Image 1 (cartoon, helix red, strand yellow):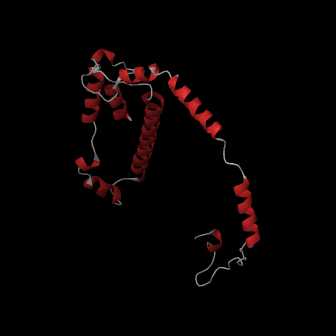
Image 2: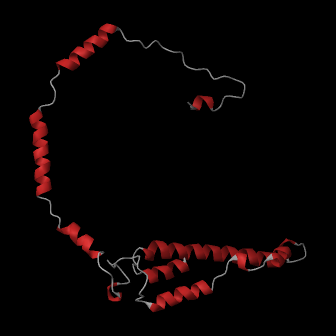
Length: 182
């Protein structure tokens, strides 16, 4: 077993362990403990029966209406009119049919407006950045500050959208659009 005493020990040294103590128990102590255990009365069966009876009464008097109502909400197919944008109780995983076509169109526009570094050959840009005479110090400073500004602004916008709005927006296509922005 590892412990903190071994942490600062240099290699080759053996840690000093605590001396082992004799932990044997005299037989008379063991026999006395066994006698006291057998003398104690077991739990009264009436208290166990009382608990079982109380549990059965609680189960018999339970109101199942709220649970059944909760199950019935997601049981039927959802129509477009039931898909509210905020605080909707409809199934959130059903994307089609759309209720808010504008949100889905904005999501598609956002996807088309986005590119990944793997899609664009940036070897010339990397070579320009690494070369001594590719960019002046002022140009490098402008690029670095712009990247710092936009990366910070993007993270603030994403945090605001996800933490502030996403939990309130329940419509699937609107959520897709929000996550596209984040």
